[in-house]
Length: 559
Image (cartoon, rainbow, N blue to C red; front, side, top):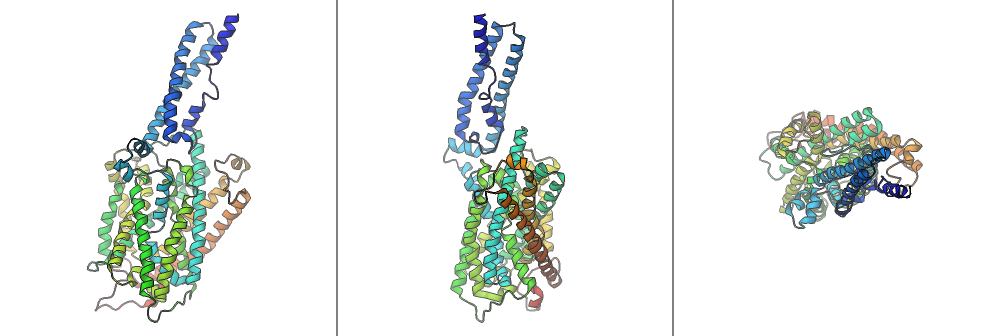
């Protein structure tokens, strides 16, 4: 009897315990745990797997020695299956991490691996470069035009206001992503070879109706965001080579931008994001310095704001400027530790302020109301080597931003046709090509560089990146149980759920009334006037008139 109790005690030590289940939890649960670091993987592989095998050997010996304990055999069988599941899950998860985290693993093996340095990115710095680079592209050239509509003071204040509001809603999107993913991983849902998108987050947290709303607004915004980049390419290159009209340049750059189908995901934009931010930094400071050196134009006036239509058109262009986080979820999913994203967009916005505020203020100071008829700041600056360099750099950056805006659309299309899990880059690229064709076509129909930004900002950005995230956050955490079990608690700047709810309600009301309401009215009024003046399929929007062609009346263009 003594021998039997001793054997039972030794056997009980082999039964599953909470501590023994910890490695499994670390494999299949939340984001941002230390499992995702390479050191944790090495510890797991060297200790936990070996202990599992040792327990399996001990299990076999014990089962042979005591064949008369059927209940114990059943428990040991369950233990063995659980341990085998741990090993299986570890193998599967490790393969998933290696697929998704291949760049990081290879960097540990070879510090100077060129492929990793250029191609694989998932760090917080990569996300910062992606956010800052994507936030300002061609809109940098239209902000002086918005200042001429708003006036200097309103232009500066609205940039700061919408920049901070955009950072807040980007934070809300990141919180909802973490909440959605943590819930799904508790259900053992695998995201191997699958990129989570914003409409899927809304579906998982709020249901299919919200999924449909998010999908419609997000895809339409990204579609026209890509159209705007294509229009900007044609508008900019015209200031270097005006032998071809802007519509012809749109044909050419449409074909060039179609090559973005070969970039698999945001994980592979490391070098492009870095270069893109460098290009916009050069262009922004070129605009500021060139305007100051040029000095104020003869007879310059600064009369803005003069009309409500102009004022709200300029305001919605700034709303559009800081509403570039329609790709926030895709950028987060490309990170090794997505939980680190929370304040990245705010830090990116603070850097963007150093580009947008000096350049827009300086150009408006130099040219004043003349900008009302020149939505592209390049058109007023003298032709020099520095200006040509800025134009070329902006062209390259707009190619990069086109890829940023189009990549989520590629993902949606891949999921629709069942190609999202395909590993072949060439097959995925071929499947993505139909997405580029409507973008190309719309850029030829509506070549209105500047006014189209305001229209998209009022009608699409207002809902996609301001109203919907704020409402979704309010509804997701409306119950006390949801707030208690939230994956992310309120930030230290706003530690109260009540304060968050109140501020989200303010965002919804403000953007709905001022952005969508007044902004939509003003932007569409201005946009329709562009169509009346230049017509659809305009061959060369705002080009210098030829000797035989009389220019359109300035009042019809932007007033």
